[in-house]
Image (tube, rainbow, N blue to C red; front, top):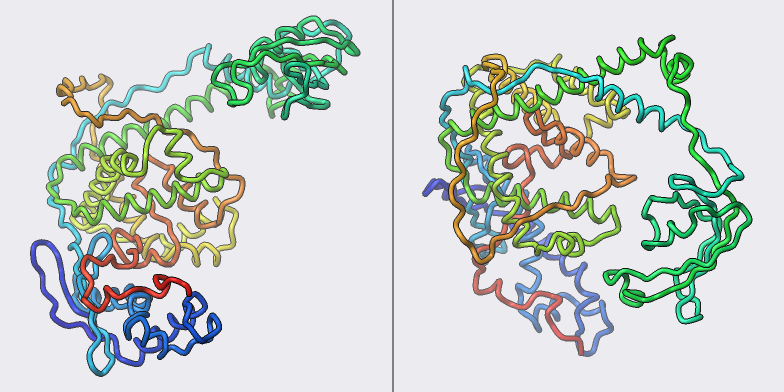
Length: 513
Protein backbone atom coordinates (compact mmCIF):
# COMPACT_ATOMS: atom_id res chain seq x y z
CA UNK A 1 0.00 0.00 0.00
CA UNK A 2 1.20 3.50 -0.85
CA UNK A 3 0.38 6.64 1.12
CA UNK A 4 0.35 10.05 -0.52
CA UNK A 5 -1.01 13.59 -0.17
CA UNK A 6 -0.32 13.70 3.57
CA UNK A 7 -1.42 17.04 5.02
CA UNK A 8 -2.10 18.46 8.48
CA UNK A 9 -4.88 20.98 8.84
CA UNK A 10 -7.17 22.18 11.63
CA UNK A 11 -5.81 19.63 14.13
CA UNK A 12 -6.49 16.83 11.70
CA UNK A 13 -4.39 14.78 9.34
CA UNK A 14 -5.60 13.85 5.86
CA UNK A 15 -4.01 11.42 3.45
CA UNK A 16 -4.74 9.02 0.61
CA UNK A 17 -3.86 5.34 0.61
CA UNK A 18 -3.56 3.47 -2.69
CA UNK A 19 -4.44 -0.23 -2.64
CA UNK A 20 -3.10 -2.16 -5.62
CA UNK A 21 -5.54 -3.55 -8.19
CA UNK A 22 -4.99 -7.23 -7.34
CA UNK A 23 -5.62 -6.77 -3.62
CA UNK A 24 -8.77 -4.78 -4.31
CA UNK A 25 -10.01 -7.27 -6.93
CA UNK A 26 -9.52 -10.17 -4.48
CA UNK A 27 -11.66 -8.37 -1.91
CA UNK A 28 -14.37 -7.54 -4.47
CA UNK A 29 -14.51 -11.22 -5.45
CA UNK A 30 -14.89 -12.20 -1.78
CA UNK A 31 -17.77 -9.73 -1.46
CA UNK A 32 -19.44 -11.27 -4.52
CA UNK A 33 -19.11 -14.78 -3.07
CA UNK A 34 -20.55 -13.64 0.28
CA UNK A 35 -23.54 -11.87 -1.23
CA UNK A 36 -24.53 -13.73 -4.38
CA UNK A 37 -27.00 -16.01 -2.60
CA UNK A 38 -28.98 -12.94 -1.47
CA UNK A 39 -29.40 -11.44 -4.92
CA UNK A 40 -32.26 -12.50 -7.16
CA UNK A 41 -31.38 -12.53 -10.88
CA UNK A 42 -34.01 -13.59 -13.46
CA UNK A 43 -33.02 -16.78 -15.24
CA UNK A 44 -30.67 -17.98 -12.54
CA UNK A 45 -31.17 -19.97 -9.37
CA UNK A 46 -30.39 -17.95 -6.25
CA UNK A 47 -26.63 -17.90 -5.71
CA UNK A 48 -25.80 -19.13 -9.21
CA UNK A 49 -25.72 -15.83 -11.12
CA UNK A 50 -22.25 -14.93 -12.42
CA UNK A 51 -20.63 -11.82 -11.02
CA UNK A 52 -20.60 -10.08 -14.43
CA UNK A 53 -24.38 -10.56 -14.73
CA UNK A 54 -25.01 -9.05 -11.28
CA UNK A 55 -22.66 -6.15 -12.01
CA UNK A 56 -24.44 -5.63 -15.30
CA UNK A 57 -27.79 -5.37 -13.54
CA UNK A 58 -26.79 -3.31 -10.48
CA UNK A 59 -23.62 -1.54 -11.55
CA UNK A 60 -19.98 -2.50 -11.84
CA UNK A 61 -19.31 -1.11 -8.39
CA UNK A 62 -22.10 -2.99 -6.61
CA UNK A 63 -19.57 -4.88 -4.44
CA UNK A 64 -17.14 -2.00 -3.97
CA UNK A 65 -18.50 -0.59 -0.71
CA UNK A 66 -18.10 -3.88 1.14
CA UNK A 67 -14.65 -4.46 -0.35
CA UNK A 68 -13.57 -0.98 0.79
CA UNK A 69 -14.92 -1.69 4.28
CA UNK A 70 -12.83 -4.87 4.43
CA UNK A 71 -9.65 -3.06 3.42
CA UNK A 72 -10.23 0.24 5.22
CA UNK A 73 -8.69 -0.48 8.61
CA UNK A 74 -5.49 -2.04 7.32
CA UNK A 75 -5.11 0.77 4.80
CA UNK A 76 -5.63 3.36 7.53
CA UNK A 77 -2.96 1.81 9.74
CA UNK A 78 -0.56 1.85 6.82
CA UNK A 79 -1.35 5.51 6.16
CA UNK A 80 -0.91 6.55 9.79
CA UNK A 81 2.45 4.79 9.94
CA UNK A 82 3.59 6.52 6.77
CA UNK A 83 2.41 9.92 8.04
CA UNK A 84 4.36 9.61 11.28
CA UNK A 85 1.44 11.16 13.13
CA UNK A 86 -0.47 9.89 16.13
CA UNK A 87 -4.22 9.95 15.66
CA UNK A 88 -7.12 9.95 18.11
CA UNK A 89 -10.53 8.35 17.86
CA UNK A 90 -12.08 6.75 14.81
CA UNK A 91 -11.04 7.95 11.36
CA UNK A 92 -13.42 8.85 8.55
CA UNK A 93 -13.32 7.94 4.87
CA UNK A 94 -14.01 11.15 3.00
CA UNK A 95 -13.83 9.62 -0.47
CA UNK A 96 -12.72 6.61 -2.45
CA UNK A 97 -12.26 5.89 -6.13
CA UNK A 98 -11.15 3.10 -8.44
CA UNK A 99 -8.94 4.04 -11.38
CA UNK A 100 -8.95 2.56 -14.86
CA UNK A 101 -6.37 -0.04 -13.85
CA UNK A 102 -8.50 -1.22 -10.92
CA UNK A 103 -6.38 0.30 -8.14
CA UNK A 104 -8.32 1.69 -5.17
CA UNK A 105 -7.55 5.06 -3.55
CA UNK A 106 -9.12 5.74 -0.14
CA UNK A 107 -9.07 9.26 1.31
CA UNK A 108 -8.95 9.51 5.10
CA UNK A 109 -9.39 12.20 7.71
CA UNK A 110 -8.50 11.67 11.38
CA UNK A 111 -8.08 13.86 14.45
CA UNK A 112 -4.52 14.37 15.65
CA UNK A 113 -3.69 13.09 19.11
CA UNK A 114 -3.97 16.07 21.49
CA UNK A 115 -0.90 17.58 23.10
CA UNK A 116 -1.40 18.33 26.79
CA UNK A 117 0.32 21.27 28.53
CA UNK A 118 0.90 20.45 32.19
CA UNK A 119 -0.03 22.79 34.98
CA UNK A 120 0.70 22.20 38.65
CA UNK A 121 0.88 18.51 39.48
CA UNK A 122 3.28 18.39 42.42
CA UNK A 123 2.54 19.70 45.88
CA UNK A 124 -1.21 19.35 45.48
CA UNK A 125 -3.30 19.06 48.64
CA UNK A 126 -6.18 16.72 49.37
CA UNK A 127 -8.15 15.57 52.41
CA UNK A 128 -6.98 12.29 53.96
CA UNK A 129 -8.29 11.61 57.47
CA UNK A 130 -6.73 9.24 59.95
CA UNK A 131 -8.19 5.74 59.97
CA UNK A 132 -10.41 4.88 62.92
CA UNK A 133 -12.40 1.72 63.61
CA UNK A 134 -15.18 1.80 66.20
CA UNK A 135 -16.36 -1.05 68.42
CA UNK A 136 -19.74 -0.85 66.69
CA UNK A 137 -18.12 -1.52 63.32
CA UNK A 138 -16.35 -4.55 64.76
CA UNK A 139 -19.64 -5.77 66.24
CA UNK A 140 -21.35 -5.45 62.88
CA UNK A 141 -18.61 -7.39 61.09
CA UNK A 142 -18.53 -10.17 63.69
CA UNK A 143 -22.33 -10.45 63.64
CA UNK A 144 -22.26 -10.83 59.86
CA UNK A 145 -19.77 -13.69 60.19
CA UNK A 146 -21.91 -15.20 62.92
CA UNK A 147 -24.95 -15.17 60.64
CA UNK A 148 -22.98 -16.79 57.83
CA UNK A 149 -22.11 -19.61 60.20
CA UNK A 150 -25.65 -20.11 61.48
CA UNK A 151 -27.32 -23.52 61.27
CA UNK A 152 -30.86 -24.27 60.18
CA UNK A 153 -32.88 -26.57 62.42
CA UNK A 154 -36.43 -27.90 62.22
CA UNK A 155 -38.76 -26.91 65.06
CA UNK A 156 -42.16 -28.20 66.15
CA UNK A 157 -43.53 -24.86 67.29
CA UNK A 158 -45.58 -22.41 65.23
CA UNK A 159 -43.75 -20.38 62.60
CA UNK A 160 -42.39 -16.98 63.60
CA UNK A 161 -40.99 -14.05 61.69
CA UNK A 162 -37.52 -14.84 60.28
CA UNK A 163 -38.30 -18.57 60.30
CA UNK A 164 -38.20 -20.49 57.03
CA UNK A 165 -41.23 -22.55 56.08
CA UNK A 166 -41.17 -25.26 53.42
CA UNK A 167 -44.53 -25.12 51.64
CA UNK A 168 -46.63 -26.23 48.71
CA UNK A 169 -48.95 -23.55 47.38
CA UNK A 170 -51.66 -23.37 44.74
CA UNK A 171 -53.20 -20.06 43.66
CA UNK A 172 -56.81 -19.43 42.56
CA UNK A 173 -58.55 -16.39 41.14
CA UNK A 174 -62.34 -16.49 40.99
CA UNK A 175 -62.13 -20.21 41.81
CA UNK A 176 -59.77 -20.98 38.91
CA UNK A 177 -56.06 -21.68 38.98
CA UNK A 178 -53.90 -19.03 37.34
CA UNK A 179 -50.55 -19.41 35.60
CA UNK A 180 -47.48 -19.09 37.82
CA UNK A 181 -49.46 -19.50 41.04
CA UNK A 182 -48.30 -22.98 41.96
CA UNK A 183 -45.17 -24.19 43.73
CA UNK A 184 -43.89 -27.26 45.56
CA UNK A 185 -41.37 -27.59 48.41
CA UNK A 186 -40.74 -23.86 48.31
CA UNK A 187 -38.44 -22.44 51.01
CA UNK A 188 -39.98 -19.15 52.14
CA UNK A 189 -38.40 -16.96 54.81
CA UNK A 190 -41.18 -15.17 56.67
CA UNK A 191 -40.66 -11.43 56.63
CA UNK A 192 -38.48 -11.51 53.51
CA UNK A 193 -41.13 -9.85 51.34
CA UNK A 194 -40.54 -12.44 48.62
CA UNK A 195 -44.27 -13.08 48.13
CA UNK A 196 -47.28 -10.84 47.57
CA UNK A 197 -47.89 -8.46 50.51
CA UNK A 198 -49.92 -10.19 53.22
CA UNK A 199 -49.03 -13.73 52.17
CA UNK A 200 -46.19 -14.29 54.62
CA UNK A 201 -48.00 -12.66 57.55
CA UNK A 202 -50.83 -15.19 57.25
CA UNK A 203 -48.40 -18.09 57.80
CA UNK A 204 -47.25 -16.82 61.20
CA UNK A 205 -48.16 -19.48 63.77
CA UNK A 206 -48.50 -22.30 61.22
CA UNK A 207 -47.04 -25.67 62.24
CA UNK A 208 -45.66 -28.56 60.20
CA UNK A 209 -48.46 -30.55 58.50
CA UNK A 210 -50.97 -27.68 58.70
CA UNK A 211 -52.98 -26.50 55.68
CA UNK A 212 -54.13 -22.89 55.37
CA UNK A 213 -55.99 -20.67 52.95
CA UNK A 214 -54.20 -17.38 52.34
CA UNK A 215 -56.14 -14.49 50.83
CA UNK A 216 -54.24 -11.65 49.15
CA UNK A 217 -54.73 -8.73 46.78
CA UNK A 218 -52.06 -8.29 44.11
CA UNK A 219 -50.51 -4.81 43.89
CA UNK A 220 -51.70 -2.47 41.16
CA UNK A 221 -48.23 -2.46 39.61
CA UNK A 222 -48.09 -6.26 39.35
CA UNK A 223 -48.15 -8.16 36.06
CA UNK A 224 -51.05 -6.91 33.96
CA UNK A 225 -53.21 -10.05 34.19
CA UNK A 226 -53.08 -10.04 38.02
CA UNK A 227 -52.68 -6.34 38.84
CA UNK A 228 -55.12 -5.37 41.62
CA UNK A 229 -56.77 -8.80 41.58
CA UNK A 230 -57.95 -10.74 44.66
CA UNK A 231 -56.60 -14.29 44.96
CA UNK A 232 -56.66 -17.23 47.33
CA UNK A 233 -53.79 -19.64 47.89
CA UNK A 234 -54.11 -23.13 49.33
CA UNK A 235 -50.93 -23.64 51.34
CA UNK A 236 -49.58 -26.78 52.98
CA UNK A 237 -46.73 -26.37 55.47
CA UNK A 238 -44.29 -29.28 55.41
CA UNK A 239 -41.66 -27.97 57.81
CA UNK A 240 -40.82 -24.99 60.00
CA UNK A 241 -37.13 -24.13 60.33
CA UNK A 242 -35.37 -21.61 62.54
CA UNK A 243 -31.95 -20.04 62.14
CA UNK A 244 -29.74 -20.82 65.14
CA UNK A 245 -26.77 -18.50 65.62
CA UNK A 246 -23.61 -19.83 67.29
CA UNK A 247 -22.77 -18.49 70.73
CA UNK A 248 -20.37 -15.57 70.64
CA UNK A 249 -17.51 -17.06 72.66
CA UNK A 250 -14.01 -18.46 72.36
CA UNK A 251 -15.29 -21.66 70.73
CA UNK A 252 -16.87 -19.56 68.00
CA UNK A 253 -13.53 -17.82 67.39
CA UNK A 254 -11.75 -21.18 67.17
CA UNK A 255 -14.31 -22.55 64.72
CA UNK A 256 -14.20 -19.68 62.24
CA UNK A 257 -10.62 -18.40 62.55
CA UNK A 258 -7.04 -19.25 63.48
CA UNK A 259 -7.42 -17.57 66.87
CA UNK A 260 -8.05 -19.21 70.25
CA UNK A 261 -10.05 -16.44 71.89
CA UNK A 262 -12.86 -14.12 70.88
CA UNK A 263 -10.76 -11.13 71.95
CA UNK A 264 -7.94 -12.13 69.59
CA UNK A 265 -10.43 -12.64 66.78
CA UNK A 266 -11.96 -9.19 67.38
CA UNK A 267 -8.47 -7.67 67.23
CA UNK A 268 -7.91 -9.32 63.86
CA UNK A 269 -11.24 -7.98 62.62
CA UNK A 270 -10.20 -4.50 63.77
CA UNK A 271 -6.97 -4.73 61.76
CA UNK A 272 -8.79 -6.03 58.69
CA UNK A 273 -11.35 -3.23 58.85
CA UNK A 274 -8.56 -0.72 59.36
CA UNK A 275 -6.75 -2.02 56.28
CA UNK A 276 -9.92 -1.86 54.19
CA UNK A 277 -10.59 1.70 55.32
CA UNK A 278 -6.99 2.70 54.64
CA UNK A 279 -7.19 1.30 51.10
CA UNK A 280 -10.44 3.16 50.49
CA UNK A 281 -9.05 6.44 51.83
CA UNK A 282 -5.84 6.02 49.82
CA UNK A 283 -7.99 5.37 46.78
CA UNK A 284 -10.10 8.49 47.35
CA UNK A 285 -6.96 10.57 48.04
CA UNK A 286 -5.43 9.46 44.75
CA UNK A 287 -8.64 10.12 42.82
CA UNK A 288 -8.89 13.69 44.12
CA UNK A 289 -5.26 14.36 43.22
CA UNK A 290 -5.71 12.97 39.70
CA UNK A 291 -8.72 15.22 39.15
CA UNK A 292 -6.86 18.27 40.45
CA UNK A 293 -3.80 17.62 38.31
CA UNK A 294 -6.03 17.00 35.27
CA UNK A 295 -7.95 20.24 35.92
CA UNK A 296 -4.64 22.12 35.74
CA UNK A 297 -3.88 20.76 32.27
CA UNK A 298 -4.48 22.74 29.11
CA UNK A 299 -5.64 20.40 26.37
CA UNK A 300 -8.26 20.32 23.65
CA UNK A 301 -9.76 16.85 23.44
CA UNK A 302 -11.06 16.02 19.95
CA UNK A 303 -14.70 14.99 19.70
CA UNK A 304 -13.57 11.93 17.76
CA UNK A 305 -11.56 10.79 20.76
CA UNK A 306 -14.51 11.15 23.13
CA UNK A 307 -16.92 9.55 20.66
CA UNK A 308 -14.66 6.52 20.28
CA UNK A 309 -14.48 6.01 24.05
CA UNK A 310 -18.25 6.46 24.42
CA UNK A 311 -18.75 3.83 21.71
CA UNK A 312 -16.37 1.48 23.50
CA UNK A 313 -18.22 1.94 26.79
CA UNK A 314 -21.56 1.34 25.09
CA UNK A 315 -20.29 -1.87 23.53
CA UNK A 316 -18.98 -3.11 26.88
CA UNK A 317 -22.30 -2.28 28.56
CA UNK A 318 -24.17 -4.06 25.79
CA UNK A 319 -22.10 -7.21 26.39
CA UNK A 320 -22.80 -7.04 30.11
CA UNK A 321 -26.55 -6.60 29.79
CA UNK A 322 -26.67 -9.38 27.18
CA UNK A 323 -25.00 -11.67 29.73
CA UNK A 324 -27.95 -10.88 32.03
CA UNK A 325 -30.45 -11.88 29.36
CA UNK A 326 -31.46 -8.30 28.54
CA UNK A 327 -31.24 -6.23 25.42
CA UNK A 328 -29.66 -2.80 25.47
CA UNK A 329 -33.07 -1.31 24.77
CA UNK A 330 -34.58 -3.04 27.82
CA UNK A 331 -31.76 -1.84 30.06
CA UNK A 332 -32.07 1.75 28.90
CA UNK A 333 -35.84 1.59 29.32
CA UNK A 334 -35.32 0.52 32.96
CA UNK A 335 -33.30 3.71 33.38
CA UNK A 336 -35.95 5.82 31.69
CA UNK A 337 -33.61 6.70 28.86
CA UNK A 338 -32.85 6.09 25.22
CA UNK A 339 -29.42 5.54 23.68
CA UNK A 340 -28.90 9.18 22.75
CA UNK A 341 -29.64 10.39 26.29
CA UNK A 342 -27.42 7.71 27.83
CA UNK A 343 -24.53 8.69 25.57
CA UNK A 344 -24.98 12.30 26.68
CA UNK A 345 -25.12 11.14 30.30
CA UNK A 346 -21.78 9.28 30.23
CA UNK A 347 -19.97 11.77 27.99
CA UNK A 348 -18.73 14.12 30.79
CA UNK A 349 -17.27 11.20 32.76
CA UNK A 350 -15.63 9.79 29.64
CA UNK A 351 -14.13 13.19 28.82
CA UNK A 352 -12.77 13.49 32.36
CA UNK A 353 -11.31 9.99 32.13
CA UNK A 354 -9.48 10.86 28.90
CA UNK A 355 -8.23 14.13 30.39
CA UNK A 356 -6.64 12.26 33.32
CA UNK A 357 -4.97 9.82 30.92
CA UNK A 358 -3.55 12.64 28.79
CA UNK A 359 -2.25 14.33 31.93
CA UNK A 360 -0.55 11.14 33.15
CA UNK A 361 1.02 10.52 29.75
CA UNK A 362 2.50 14.02 29.83
CA UNK A 363 3.74 13.58 33.42
CA UNK A 364 5.45 10.33 32.41
CA UNK A 365 7.10 12.12 29.50
CA UNK A 366 8.14 15.13 31.61
CA UNK A 367 9.53 13.00 34.43
CA UNK A 368 11.41 10.73 32.03
CA UNK A 369 9.59 7.69 33.37
CA UNK A 370 10.74 4.41 31.86
CA UNK A 371 9.56 0.83 32.26
CA UNK A 372 12.04 -1.99 31.95
CA UNK A 373 11.62 -5.51 30.60
CA UNK A 374 11.79 -6.96 34.11
CA UNK A 375 8.91 -4.76 35.25
CA UNK A 376 6.81 -5.80 32.27
CA UNK A 377 7.53 -9.46 32.98
CA UNK A 378 6.64 -8.99 36.65
CA UNK A 379 3.33 -7.40 35.64
CA UNK A 380 2.52 -10.32 33.35
CA UNK A 381 3.27 -12.66 36.26
CA UNK A 382 1.02 -10.63 38.56
CA UNK A 383 -1.85 -10.79 36.08
CA UNK A 384 -1.30 -14.51 35.61
CA UNK A 385 -1.49 -15.12 39.35
CA UNK A 386 -4.41 -12.75 39.94
CA UNK A 387 -6.60 -14.26 37.24
CA UNK A 388 -5.33 -17.82 37.55
CA UNK A 389 -4.32 -17.94 33.88
CA UNK A 390 -1.41 -19.43 32.01
CA UNK A 391 1.28 -16.82 31.48
CA UNK A 392 1.30 -17.35 27.71
CA UNK A 393 -2.46 -16.85 27.61
CA UNK A 394 -2.12 -13.51 29.41
CA UNK A 395 0.50 -12.44 26.87
CA UNK A 396 -1.90 -13.32 24.05
CA UNK A 397 -4.67 -11.23 25.56
CA UNK A 398 -2.66 -8.24 26.75
CA UNK A 399 -0.15 -6.75 24.29
CA UNK A 400 3.21 -5.74 25.72
CA UNK A 401 2.85 -2.10 24.68
CA UNK A 402 -0.42 -1.90 26.65
CA UNK A 403 1.26 -3.31 29.77
CA UNK A 404 4.15 -0.88 29.30
CA UNK A 405 1.77 2.08 28.99
CA UNK A 406 -0.19 1.01 32.07
CA UNK A 407 2.97 0.82 34.15
CA UNK A 408 4.16 4.21 32.91
CA UNK A 409 0.85 5.79 33.87
CA UNK A 410 0.93 4.09 37.25
CA UNK A 411 4.39 5.48 37.90
CA UNK A 412 3.22 8.93 36.80
CA UNK A 413 0.30 8.67 39.21
CA UNK A 414 2.71 7.68 42.00
CA UNK A 415 4.81 10.80 41.31
CA UNK A 416 1.76 13.00 41.91
CA UNK A 417 0.68 11.13 45.06
CA UNK A 418 4.14 11.03 46.61
CA UNK A 419 4.57 14.79 46.12
CA UNK A 420 1.10 15.61 47.47
CA UNK A 421 0.22 17.03 50.87
CA UNK A 422 -2.45 15.25 52.93
CA UNK A 423 -4.67 17.44 55.09
CA UNK A 424 -6.88 16.37 57.98
CA UNK A 425 -9.47 19.05 57.31
CA UNK A 426 -12.09 18.46 54.60
CA UNK A 427 -12.01 20.95 51.78
CA UNK A 428 -14.98 23.25 51.58
CA UNK A 429 -16.82 22.55 48.33
CA UNK A 430 -17.29 25.49 46.01
CA UNK A 431 -20.79 26.91 45.90
CA UNK A 432 -22.63 25.14 43.07
CA UNK A 433 -23.61 27.27 40.11
CA UNK A 434 -27.28 27.87 39.60
CA UNK A 435 -28.47 25.17 37.21
CA UNK A 436 -29.93 26.34 33.96
CA UNK A 437 -33.42 25.20 33.20
CA UNK A 438 -33.48 22.70 30.39
CA UNK A 439 -36.51 21.08 28.90
CA UNK A 440 -34.67 17.82 28.30
CA UNK A 441 -32.89 17.73 31.66
CA UNK A 442 -32.78 14.23 33.07
CA UNK A 443 -31.65 12.63 36.30
CA UNK A 444 -30.45 9.08 35.94
CA UNK A 445 -29.83 6.38 38.48
CA UNK A 446 -28.03 3.57 36.65
CA UNK A 447 -29.35 0.07 37.25
CA UNK A 448 -26.81 -2.20 38.91
CA UNK A 449 -26.07 -5.30 36.86
CA UNK A 450 -25.01 -8.52 38.46
CA UNK A 451 -21.67 -9.74 37.19
CA UNK A 452 -22.29 -12.40 34.53
CA UNK A 453 -21.50 -15.93 35.61
CA UNK A 454 -19.31 -16.54 32.58
CA UNK A 455 -17.49 -13.92 30.56
CA UNK A 456 -14.53 -14.32 28.26
CA UNK A 457 -11.08 -14.14 29.73
CA UNK A 458 -10.21 -10.85 28.10
CA UNK A 459 -13.32 -9.21 29.50
CA UNK A 460 -12.38 -10.43 32.98
CA UNK A 461 -9.04 -8.70 32.70
CA UNK A 462 -10.54 -5.50 31.37
CA UNK A 463 -13.31 -5.24 33.94
CA UNK A 464 -11.15 -6.11 36.94
CA UNK A 465 -8.42 -3.65 36.01
CA UNK A 466 -10.85 -0.82 35.28
CA UNK A 467 -12.49 -1.40 38.67
CA UNK A 468 -9.31 -0.21 40.37
CA UNK A 469 -10.45 3.39 40.37
CA UNK A 470 -7.55 4.56 42.50
CA UNK A 471 -5.10 3.79 39.75
CA UNK A 472 -4.94 5.08 36.19
CA UNK A 473 -7.46 3.22 34.10
CA UNK A 474 -5.88 0.18 32.51
CA UNK A 475 -7.13 -0.56 29.05
CA UNK A 476 -6.28 -4.25 29.05
CA UNK A 477 -7.77 -5.27 25.76
CA UNK A 478 -7.09 -7.86 23.09
CA UNK A 479 -4.29 -7.76 20.54
CA UNK A 480 -6.35 -5.34 18.49
CA UNK A 481 -5.56 -2.72 21.12
CA UNK A 482 -2.06 -2.37 19.75
CA UNK A 483 -3.05 0.52 17.50
CA UNK A 484 -5.35 3.49 17.86
CA UNK A 485 -6.17 6.18 20.40
CA UNK A 486 -4.78 5.63 23.88
CA UNK A 487 -4.22 1.95 23.21
CA UNK A 488 -7.68 1.40 21.79
CA UNK A 489 -8.44 -0.06 18.40
CA UNK A 490 -10.08 2.31 15.93
CA UNK A 491 -13.29 1.10 14.45
CA UNK A 492 -13.69 0.76 10.71
CA UNK A 493 -13.33 4.25 9.30
CA UNK A 494 -16.67 5.99 8.97
CA UNK A 495 -17.69 7.46 5.64
CA UNK A 496 -18.55 11.15 5.61
CA UNK A 497 -19.02 11.32 1.86
CA UNK A 498 -19.38 8.73 -0.87
CA UNK A 499 -18.41 9.04 -4.49
CA UNK A 500 -21.08 9.09 -7.11
CA UNK A 501 -20.35 5.48 -7.91
CA UNK A 502 -20.55 4.42 -4.29
CA UNK A 503 -24.16 5.58 -4.12
CA UNK A 504 -25.18 2.61 -6.29
CA UNK A 505 -27.41 0.04 -4.56
CA UNK A 506 -25.59 -2.46 -2.38
CA UNK A 507 -26.13 -6.22 -2.90
CA UNK A 508 -28.92 -6.51 -0.35
CA UNK A 509 -30.82 -3.61 -1.88
CA UNK A 510 -32.33 -5.24 -5.03
CA UNK A 511 -35.82 -6.57 -4.46
CA UNK A 512 -36.19 -10.25 -5.04
CA UNK A 513 -38.03 -11.24 -8.14
